[in-house]
Amino acid sequence: MLKPIYIASYHQSKFGKLMGMTVPEIVRNSVEGVCKMIGVEASILDVGSIGAACNFSLNRQGLLSGLMASVPGMEGKPIEAVENACATGGQAILSVIQKLQMGLGEVGVAVGYEKMRDAEGKMDGKLIGEVLGYFSHPDEREGKVFIFPHIFAEVMHCYMKVHQVSEEALAQIAVDEYGNARHNPFAQMQKVQITLDQAMKIEGINRYVVEGLPLKTYDCSQITDGYAAMILATEDGLKKLGVPRSSCVEIAGYAQATDPLKKVGRDVLKPAGAFAAMGKAYAMARITPSDVNVAEIHDCFTVMGAIGTEVIGKAAYGRGAQYWVEGKARVDGECGINTSGGLIAKGHPVGATGVAMVGWAAQQLLGKVPPELQVKNAKAAATFNIGGPICASVCTVLKPAA
Image 1 (tube, rainbow, N blue to C red):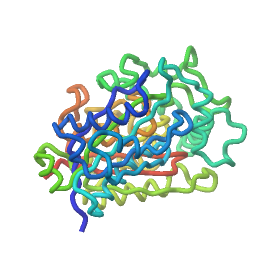
Image 2: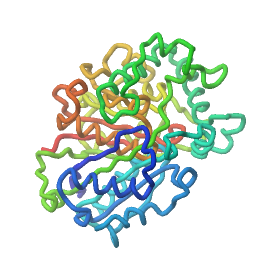
Image 3: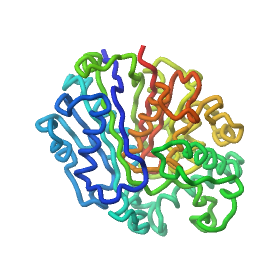
Image 4: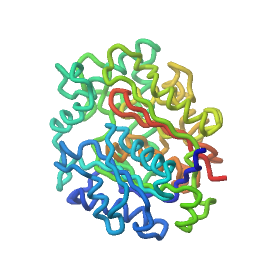
């Protein structure tokens, strides 16, 4: 019998640039920050999980569990480091849930972060492109300078061709998300606004990323520093923390599935693992997509905003982009999707993304997001976090604690 799991606390940095903050400082700030939100010390936590995707290649740091154990009060506890590309944050949450279900404790902390820029806030685009490319199959890297934008440019081209969707329809996703980010104080692109004309016009920074393919700059997520942390607890854990269940959100459904890393040879427009994981999460939560009116999906590129809308069951196969064009994904629409600004405008600190998606969705259900972004009568939420070329999928369904 699985125990109900609740989100007792959530904390994140502003996404964008962490400047001179070191990795040990990031880890400590994450753990102590999320504890401070509910007035507890780290010593009350029983277990932990931490993830970052580029910690070896960009930060020259391994054994992140040891850094978490260096936070006062965390020493000597069951902690593990996880990595699942851009689904690392979601995997960290599942890691903690599994520890709690195994009886290793009643309270745990999940942390995700990424430090992709230097102490001056500058980035090495070519290096980052190479490093992120490590999360693709070796056979699909040859001839690609920026591997992931190239891979998803191919996915975008395929989506448009198979479903007869225009570039303009996909650009609408980015426009809506930039509009949402304007009201999110944690968003990287909070001070940037774009119109549909700007998103479509090839000038200035907006250009086609790969010659002959439709992906443009505004279709892409950001290079981002940031961290996010979450305290998860069982019923007994909430009592230990002194947190009333009425102030919490339940992770009522959760699942993970992994498709083959190689894109060729499988239907990336209908990724089997993603749909399977989402279906299992809904079944565990005992609700259907029609019950959901809040969602955070992994829009690393606009085409994934469309596919993700289909994965969570809010749009039929091939109709994800149209859902946005019709305004159904807006804050006041049928289901507020990526009201945070999504990866495209909120930012995409790879290891933190999955934690932040669940955190924002929970805040929506608690009525704690800025009023301009608050979905009215938020009743249930779905999240869909992916890693690689639609390879690893972590899905959750959230409900207010009964």
